[in-house]
Amino acid sequence: MNYLKCSVVSYKQDGNFHRSWDSFFIIEETKDYYILGNHISKIIEDDGRVWYSKDPVISIFYKETFKNIICMIKNTGIKYYVNLASPSFFHEQTIYYIDYDLDITYSLENGINILDYDEYEENKIKYNYSAELIYSIQKETQNVIKLINQKEFPFNTTKIMNYYNLIINLK
Image 1: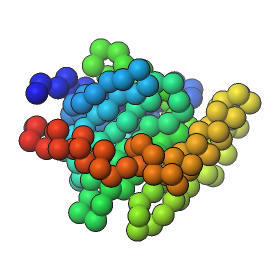
Image 2 (image 1 turned 180 degrees about the vertical axis):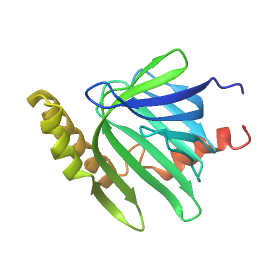
Image 3 (image 1 turned 45 degrees about the vertical axis):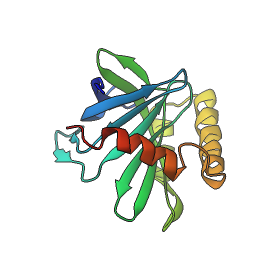
């Protein structure tokens, strides 16, 4: 199959560049999300630092909910990294979103971990997050934990590996 290539770019609430990734393939688009995959990605940080991902990933960028989820395919299983973020949108071969700092990681071996809470609390004040935005982030955090505990998509290894198998031979 021929999949469209795209990049991903994130910003902070004030509109400043945060991070970008290249070399994604759009595997699927539904009314709710985009499914992307890649083997390795060049990542550019806001300070100009460049590095490369080490593991293949399947990423889900939601159009209406305040999250995106990176499923890292590792030898030990899938490690999930959830960014609490604005809904994503696609424009000119790029997916864009706003990063709200709060992150959740999940793996069978390490369980659920909430990351960067202090950074979220600082930026909530710095960027003057609205009460509605704070509520949306908190609600989505609870929803993600529920999805993990109930093993619902995308926290379902079989479905993620099926997506990975679609791109395994793409470069």
